[in-house]
Image 1 (spheres, one colour):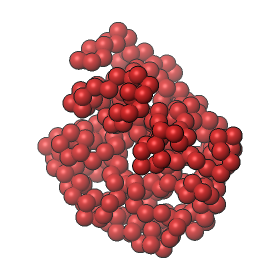
Image 2 (image 1 turned 90 degrees about the vertical axis):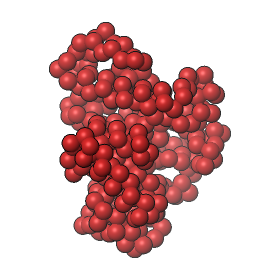
Image 3 (image 1 turned 120 degrees about the vertical axis):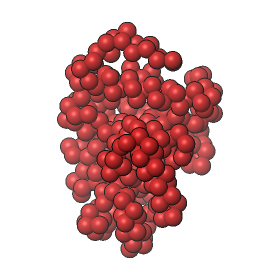
Image 4 (image 1 turned 135 degrees about the vertical axis):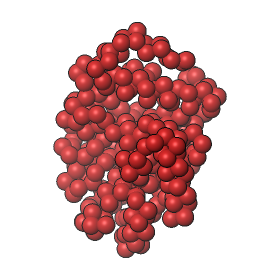
Length: 287
């Protein structure tokens, strides 16, 4: 099983002046010890359950560009990009730039967006949920077209592009992860388009149910569910109780989960990453 690190809470020791140094050191340890992926959130404001808008929050793709220069091996992405935040043509260009400058290490995480307060706060349009899902599907289609030999028009309900030119092309096709576990829309779109899903690791039974729903969508769409990487987040703290965490991952692995996301302890992110690299990663890789 692979480990991913999610930098969700940036109120680290030293305050804003130390964020860059701490992030760079943490990423270097992750890169050296075999962490597979590093992600950040894609938000304007910090989420309410992580302290709310008056906590520190960085712009996601700028941060990934910084991390690309600090690392050599780890995959880089946002978990996940809200479709309301950037025009899809610009988003495809941004992810392509990250991929080229990181020597082929970009991931594209996508979701329908949900945090209304940050949209209203910064004056960003926030359509109804049905429209956001329509925009999500069109965004996927546009990215796929821009990462292909087809540089012609795209005419959708919400987006119209006269030319989908994207040069240079990505060095590799960025892995598409669709975040969320909604059974009717989100998991259907995972089955149709995605390379990976990301589910909340609330319990083995809950994850098994979501995977059953995903498999049913794949059957209806005539897609092999084994083509989709199954990942989880929020399933324990590898730096707090490594033995308990590894035992949990043994159970999730039996369901087909092949990657787990963990959030560093904000009080000691460097120490946490060092402990996880030494005490957890070798055993996790063997699962």
